[in-house]
Length: 490
Image 1 (cartoon, rainbow, N blue to C red):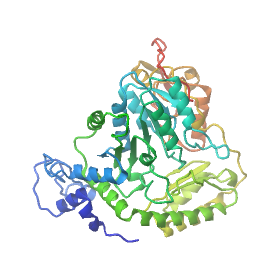
Image 2: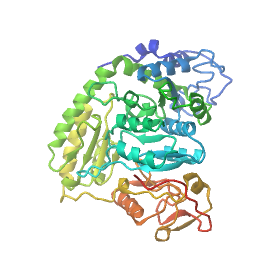
Image 3: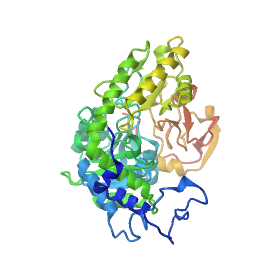
Image 4: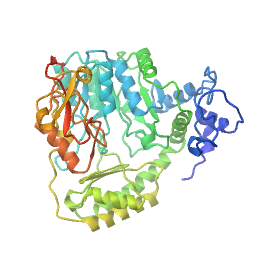
């Protein structure tokens, strides 16, 4: 379906402001320093318009951002919406600042993104970990069990909030309604990092979005599954829910405290236009893409040995493929796809993840499936067993609070010497950026095995000071290790 982007401007105040700015002839004596002139560094700065003295006056007298956020709040059924130009990372950390304080406990899904973990460090929170259930057939994470959250809250009655990441990176969807019920039974808010689900709730064949299912706060990335600039995200909250589980003023202050004061207008305008498009044409566009993806799944299932993640608890627009049964190496398949101009979101030896959005059409998916068919046929080998050293199986043992470990005196020791010591750093395979080791956690043989497994399958290990992982930073032994109040994963 063809759409007219300029036709959205009547319903998208930030987009309208951005388009009007493009038509102006000005000699600005404000930032940004390129002054919108391309003769110095080229077209790379084209379209870069600031919010202040760009989309709006320096005093924000036109109120276009507030109006755009209000329209998004209405669309998602939220009481509050804020547009982030720092991605879900900024929004996650803003929520951490808002819901609890230094020394407090929070129940946290182990499938959280590193940004939320670092939010715990910034605020001084101690995580009570809950692990996702794992699918025996694939080894991939399912949702976090409401029963596990209920148990964690019973064991830690002073916990201030529940944080979960849902849907997962591989597209599996959990029981948000059940999680909300468990959280609210203990009078704490449910915060959902739904970075991969900006499209949820806008077509009958998609899962409802988390606010519709009872969540109190949702963070979602417009740039991941909607046609918006990189770094665009939304923080959405239900602040009038019975019980007053959220402090609105503190949520606003947390957002502002961690936001840039030089917001990129193009990112904001793209978030606004993506919202307007979703509201006007979302169901039609998503319907066509869902149908094309369904056809692609059917074709992929015909490949002998290939497992295609599917079912009512899977995002219809996330193609997650398991290659164990084909014997093909996903890294080799990825190279073939790159050569064909078809890069995928993630690939390791055993799993390929391809993201489909309403910007894709049936021709895109036909090309992808045809290339995958050809590549697997080229690289087919003896089937492999499903590996059991997944990062999702790590049982975290919190020796000290993440903030305490992050700022503690530390030393680099060999991996073997690190066993039994408290980590001073974050280590996460990327993608998806889910921590296998967090500051303050005891390093175990299982931890090292999971990291080694990820490396062996071709995943980049990110954020460690020593990228070779020959050494790991640990808290020095002369530091008094205090019980951070956390727990092993539930």
